[in-house]
Length: 438
Ligand code: PXG
Ligand code: PLP
Image 1 (cartoon, rainbow, N blue to C red):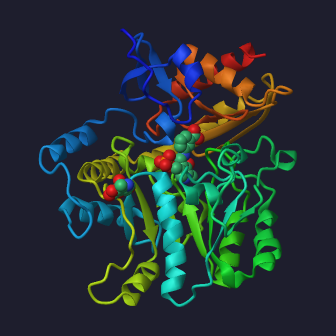
Image 2: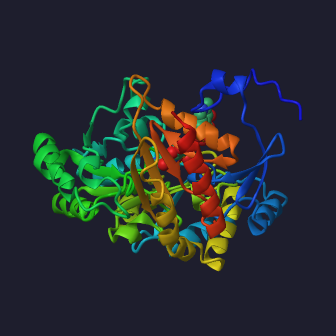
Image 3: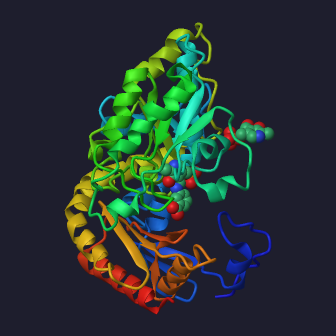
């Protein structure tokens, strides 16, 4: 296969010059596998970018999108509607964590986050509490790439390139604590007390009456699979309740079964006031994200606006795009028909066992896991952080396995349809790549 000209496409989050010198080109996909331009089969150990929940090329979703595009290709979402938008919202609300019954559609996780932050500030304002404008995120949080998301996010490497932020933000500490929690299976034992600094440090410094919302990922994915310590999220919930602060869970990765439950909220038994999701919402076949909110939040906007006024002046050209709605309706049906979230839960002990076989291999300083996600943290090479994990990633690719790396952490998050023999193969390849890496 001849290579396309690669000059024009400025690739996102990619080492462009390095990639273009040695491209890794995917040309088709089916089930658990990609096919590359040399005809090789690549086991998808990362569900694309954590998003291809039910595996690739699923017939019912493909057909739903094909049918939709030939029926209604696009409809303006402002002051107009189309039936699938209401059906998709209804279906999502029906499976949402208890009480999150209102749905605002967007096109990505980043848009979901910025939408949620605006809603949180707007909610307090329409209730006459306009001093609540500050937003609290967390170090090593990832909330996408838009200005709101990077302001509350805590990926130092991303932020340093854009030294400008929303002014009214602060950050909790990360819960990552290898000294006490290395090689945990499931939720780590230590660290619930990290939540207390929300009250003791941040609320003391800012005064609670200025805080609109706290946003966290129930499990931080992008920054290296940081699983919440037992009790941590419960404490955040209690403190937010005590001071009238909204709690937002960013479930862009943890939604749709990744942790062996429908949502992180249900896995951990903590219901947020607002929840952002994307990725698995359509099995990744059409971009889509959503913000789920409690009816009190929605109703406050409705009550505050004059008759005939737009209650929430926000939205995107492609909010509730017909193709995305059709894809989401089909994806959520498929997840239920195949009981994929239950399947992930059932497979997770086996996955955990295989993941922890990596302990003891060269440079491995932690293995951690929950549901169908695992993180493998490596010792960094002196003066070359991230290099070792990147080389492991490349070796895996050469051996026919796609995984993700972030810094010196490898992330494994296969589609939820993965079989035991594929889990075996995944960790065999990863182990051999680790053995061969200096
Ligand atoms: N919030 C969270 C928690 C995410 O994980 C976003 C927001 C942004 O979503 P969009 O759709 O705008 O990308 C994400 C996205 C990785 C990786 O390799 C993770 C994400 C995206 C790309 C790569 O870990 N998460
Ligand atoms: N920029 C311009 C000039 C626009 O007209 C619009 C939308 O109409 C946007 C940006 C926002 O685009 P979107 O709604 O796809 O986010």
